[in-house]
Image (cartoon, rainbow, N blue to C red; front, side, top):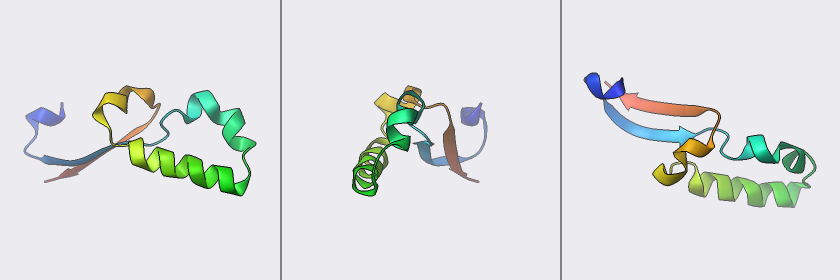
Length: 63
């Protein structure tokens, strides 16, 4: 659908990544472990090969 619009994709971001599968573990993380998880998530959230691993995505476009 996006390809038919006169827009440029700036970012396609996996908003929650694998959090759906790990939610109980994430909820139980201490602050330091959660910071490590966030670093992992931010380093992988725009990888095209992992785009299907999210329940929610954010498509940022420029008109």
